[in-house]
Image 1 (cartoon, rainbow, N blue to C red):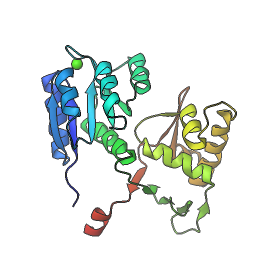
Image 2: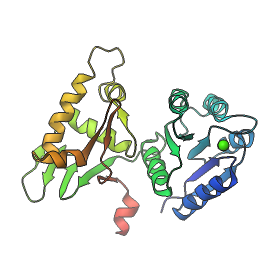
Image 3: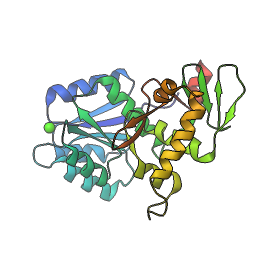
Image 4: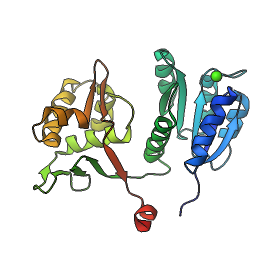
Length: 248
Ligand code: CA
């Protein structure tokens, strides 16, 4: 078994912080708690921290200040910010400031754990490749880049289609914008490829995943109007984990 992963929770509201700490502890994480920005920054900089959950409105030093200070010394430590509903500016500012993801309050323990797992999965320190993505009786084999529906013969996915799907899977639980897909899948930031190209690839990907059924297409990839796409809530993502598979 691998050692427990450590998460720092920086949140000044005691009830919320304890609720988060309990949920994480039950899920098998080691938790360090901080009730203000200054001690939160100190905890986050300790050795062996794997991820930081960072509230934005904190006494003394706010979450944005903690994040920018932390990034000076820990460029790639995963950080998820906790934002209030409706404060989209905070969300955008947090992501631009180097946060890996965000969770909107109030959130369920299940939602929070899904975000934590997704961010840890793609963290550079602990790469955990996605091996399978499935919904109902359909399964995508990421190594082979093919989808299989029940017992039928597999359908090949293009490299782009496979990468888009894996990108959505890596961010399961949140919307991924077309711009983000463009820059991550194509590595392009100069605007030579239009975001509309993403829509075309998504359309073809959905057709392959859904076997022509419009309802099934929605199950796999949800369109978030005006924002982008996200993985359907019922889609299951399996990552490579030797310990777990060996124990099963
Ligand atoms: Ca607060």
